[in-house]
Length: 155
Image 1 (tube, helix red, strand yellow):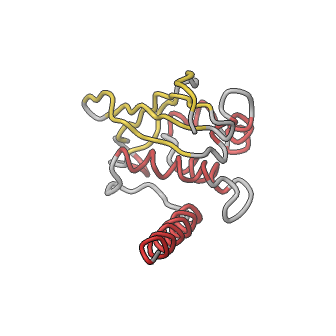
Image 2 (cartoon, rainbow, N blue to C red):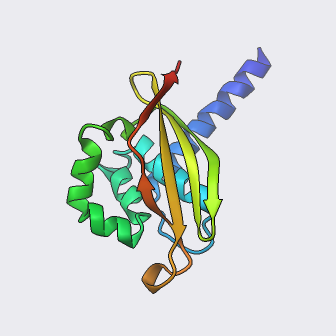
């Protein structure tokens, strides 16, 4: 019985600390590793409306590579894209897993498995690249996210 109480307290603290981390805006800096960039973006999308509406979309935009921003921006257009068919399941998704897939000089690709709110599991190829000049020099930022592919059924 005592074990269950302790486990319950730990899980409650973990839940609230995860939600709190999702509420804190993080900005690119050279100390953030490639997989961490994706985790920051995914946590934002998972808790999109915490602490306010579309905070997760803004967090994701913060780590969009300048080339990516040029293609998908400005921010209101990017938000419309994420809320549209194909990417809307990213918002408030149930869970995600990041798996290293491929890499080269200055870029990394990860397979992201995401369980959407409806229980479907989707796979995305998520590519980050190190910025070589300008304001974000030496920061890892997202250059591309593939269209989702079905990858099974979750819980």
